[in-house]
Length: 273
Image 1: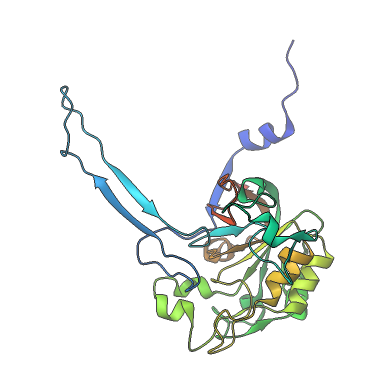
Image 2: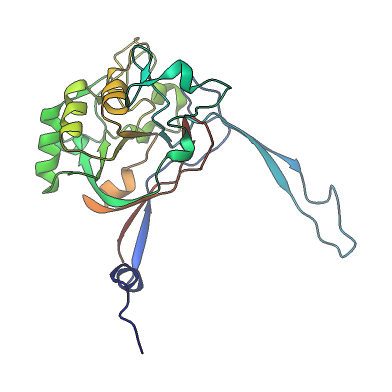
């Protein structure tokens, strides 16, 4: 007896193409001053040891913070007035050097509908101005341009165009110039729609005014602490934007880092081939 094929398997069998939504990881890539940078080097090279049959192997050592490169924030990442999401006591949760509540091992794998909110395109520019604050009105306009908006359980990705600067760490970090990103009104717009996660193509997700650095991050408070919405940073949304794709299946699998505050990720957009 032949069983009917699962609709998801049928869709995949029909042909699916994957579009990268993240940045590559390499030594010297841009990194927030609040986190240890990514480092990778070979600790064993081919020829250092040769097996009797002529085989050889190479391997590397990787040192990185959990919030370096394309990554997702766990709910343990930010507290406000000593509390994590759900009124969890932050000091108590982190006893012993790992988070007993909201650790990164609890980050969900995501296979969800995603909407690209291309704010740079709304303004008719390849990249938003340094320090520009993305508002709720900007997200409304981007959703209208996309012909759809994110809803409950969806993933909302905000494109500022800033990923174009990733190969220039000074410009990308924007210490003196500022970096575009979401304001509190944009965060409240997303929270009202009940998204499960949101991400952007910058280091901090939210607006960083010129010279301000990461001193105050109110959007993280609204999303992570108040709303339980996961944040992804250092995305690269150029390829999906160039293809004119505004709605797609979002695929993500965080590492299960027990007690951690975030995880490096490789996000993908799955679209029909």
